[in-house]
Length: 188
Image 1 (tube, one colour):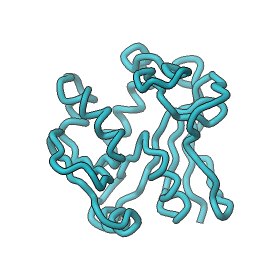
Image 2: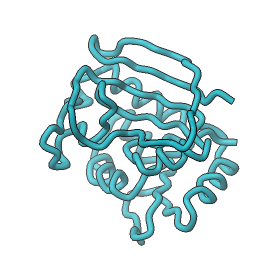
Image 3: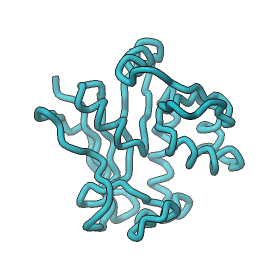
């Protein structure tokens, strides 16, 4: 049985919008280039190597598919070769290799995916999917990189839930000298 892992970059105030600065958000670009952050690059590679699949929404897919297929190196090699599942009602023919489109009811598609994948299914950059899966107790672990910035505006990674979602801290460490890495597991 696979596990859903939400792995994302957020600001201190919980914003995940436009960390690379190329989506047009006036406060975007708060992460910097991953190539300039060795510990962050290492965490991304670790996530990819431990996962059996990558799960994302269409916009996140388009962002990754526009950058990673032409790159080389261990992270690019892993991202390009691993199975990718895109939640979309509009994407028809994904160009990035090993990409499958999940259509139909999100919760049913993800529950089915969890049954057919043995290890981690990493979800990144897709706040609506993360919020829905968290609301329905389908998120098994959160891996958050909290960057030392308060943006004061922007889309938060997590929205409101109908009930409290308790988590248990698995890991906490400082990466690249200024960013907190926090890993939480769903508390049953």
